[in-house]
Length: 474
Ligand code: C2O
Ligand code: CU
Ligand code: CU
Picture 1 (tube, rainbow, N blue to C red):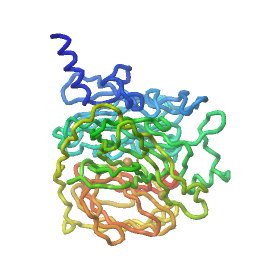
Picture 2: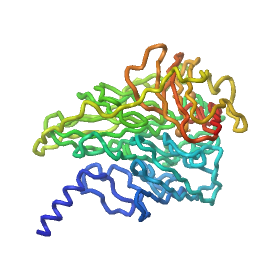
Picture 3: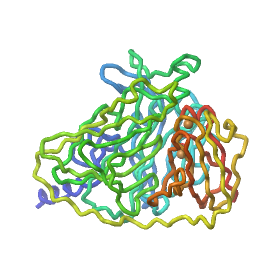
Picture 4: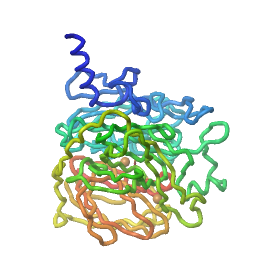
């Protein structure tokens, strides 16, 4: 009887979070993804609906690529950092310690929270100092997010050194069947010198100049910190992939060879209805959730690929930009096929923000290295508004290189791109603005006053001044 019960409990945990805990104990049986997922932060709170975790950023050495070790900046000794796994309505407290030799912050990218907990460059944490970040996860916010440092002018460097991690917010009532397993796909890239050190050329050097112009990219592509990990799927199985782009400058054009994917979510959570897609353009900082179906023959393999995408200016476009690169292999196992689960046709209702309520239209012009002709000045307010206001932002990119727009603190909806109405509703905090194009978004500043950042999420651009301050007055 006891045996039976254990077996029962074990099989239940199969559908639960699929990552090891930081202390090494598994939340689920060992499978392919167990070795590929970052650990999950341990909740030390005994209180209901409370998640209390400890994160320390420190310098350490890790082997990121075979045969060598690299000096990295790491959260709790891991690259990527451990995953923050929470539920809607949870009160989250992060006890953070900065053991780095430089100031840092932790920014909870995409999360709607009080400004003091946003980890923007206005709230630096000195070397050796500690800070408690605290927020309550809003109902309806279930989705995939990520966290990263946001120190003044050093964000690209700090992320390149290894500081980034995933956030998963689970729904109180998720419309997708519980039997669908979750897979995290946290994308990043990096560049190394022969001895293993992470390559940050001096700003004045030729290569440093190219990094500054393009946004730093590297030839090594990582999924959850691994190069070309193997993932498995059972014949007939449906998996939910939470894909996040933590690269400093690389925009991914993702395709799963021989498959279409069913997109179910964007930055701010589920869409209203699943959308069948052949490929996904995932800009820096952006997340999508897709359903992948095990339709291949047992024992065969396919790959998740990064297809060529030309975001670059011709003068600095990498020579190999047209090369398709593989990110991971997906192997269909020889296990007995599972009966595919039914996927709901409706996921949730998204309330459309009302353009007739908009009290201002903001004009944002992305030039090279500047927004509205200005460099970032933390002492300046670029856009001033108040809590509860609804506004339209018209964002225009006047140069021959893509610039991904990001707004802190508030999710927005896209109205149109180059005058073409957006086909479906989605909550976003990232929007790629391709070269010589424009888009209009609508946003409502709910709940939280304060000074919020908006910027280009090519981190070298942001660090060199492509950022502005939005002040939301009480
Ligand atoms: Cu991903 Cu200002 O941040
Ligand atoms: Cu952000
Ligand atoms: Cu940019």
